[in-house]
Image (cartoon, rainbow, N blue to C red):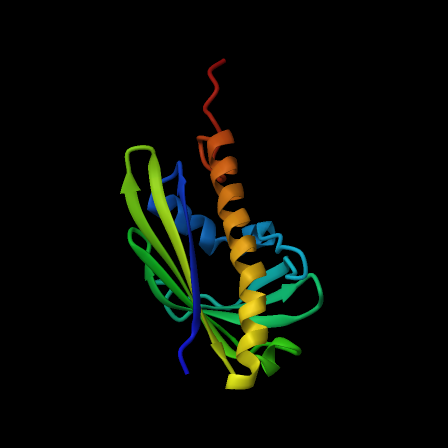
Length: 168
């Protein structure tokens, strides 16, 4: 059965490597606020973190108490990051088998064009309409998250992990 797909794009005034570093920092995942009935992220912690990032597993707990795993299947900090979202708790486990999330990076003069693409795989044909409805909220949540990432980057041009050097 074909997946339900959507994507969102935003230019973020950071390099691809800086954005990838923010993705690797699970403390930042709480910045995903969700939208309407779609919960935001409460916490995210590595169950396994590999040096090269591919194969790393993150347990995510959402604000509604639901949980899932995000496993990094591809990590190229300059071009593309791919994650598989699976092991959903109820009720999502009744609707979907897994999601695939891709972060694609394209250098621009004013930063990096980030394209986030999602593929949502329905558990069965009867669950597809419900998953499609969820995708509408999910798409909006992802777009809002990219907007927030761009605003935060613009308001802190020195990055999240460094601050401007001050001279005495």
